[in-house]
Length: 438
Image 1: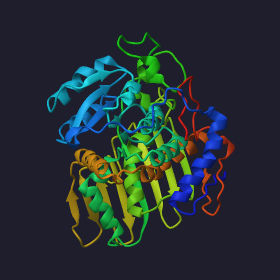
Image 2 (image 1 turned 135 degrees about the vertical axis):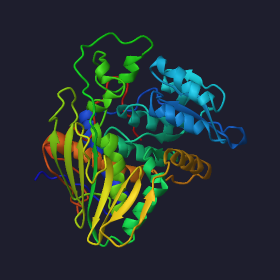
Image 3 (image 1 turned 120 degrees about the vertical axis):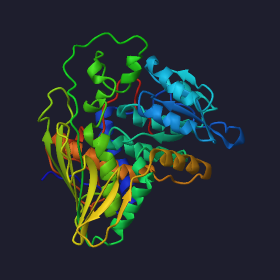
Image 4 (image 1 turned 60 degrees about the horizontal axis):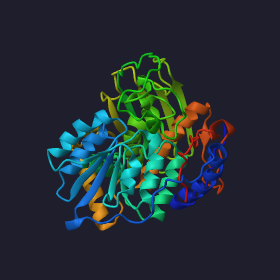
């Protein structure tokens, strides 16, 4: 067993201690410094009539959906959309214009941060941009809705938490299931004790994804600022198979299926069990089916919390899910079992017929964020709690990539990593795109 030591007297002590010590680890690997283009920390100019001006960064898929949702709120106005691919603008703009006036189109997110009229940014860029964009937005005085996972790696997540506190920013992480009423009631039922003692939770996804294929590098498509898309990632030639959507399956940009689906289902598992930091993490699997991606197409991760355990499984080449569900979380108690997914939840092996049908969560999650901005309170997807769930995904990937089991010693106040895992705690940054620090 390789030792992974983290200090944790309580949740805040753990976050603060690990952030301080991880800074030393990552600085040695990444050469981290504040970039010269960081925007001012001054607060953006409030809009009239308590209407928030928003900018959406990344509007191909999820960002386009979020832009449409925010545009429907009477106290929100999507003033700007931003993307490095100009072909993304028309479709996203059309959706937004069906609810409000046409937004401005910009290619460089720094123009968004420099705009004093923009009070809120919604970031739906690839994972490798989350840390830099979110921290710079905090420094520019913007509140932030950031898509899951919170960041590309644990070190960046810790720095986002520090920035949110320092600049007094409201940040909502895109864990929209937290805002779904049926997910909330499922968590309440698990915690109520009606399942008895719950010693095991399982979370999973099983989808038959298409192969990416093998394609030679090519010229960057017209209208795409590929160098900006790469940002902090290593310089390399354009390849369509590493670009839109499929970037998720390459370590330079994404966090694999754990960061894609795993973050959602593990988040519910963690909240239902009411646990925070595992004492041990082990992983097995790899690229057993696809040969055209870097992240595992098959992965089983075990998280030991002492009195209870969580098990994650994903298969990207099979539609046969666990418990008859393609993507879900199950809680196994000695008096019964509860299974929840986006369609609803149901209890089995008990006399009760407790169940609930699924509800919309994205609109409610966005609404919760806007309300939190108005009241300057913590949203339901706050960064500290989202980091605890995201850390499960990152630790699972670190265990897989390093080939080592990881162990957390809650009694220690120092923080370290086995040699094999150190490189995966943070990342290296290219050229001017260094991670802004406190």
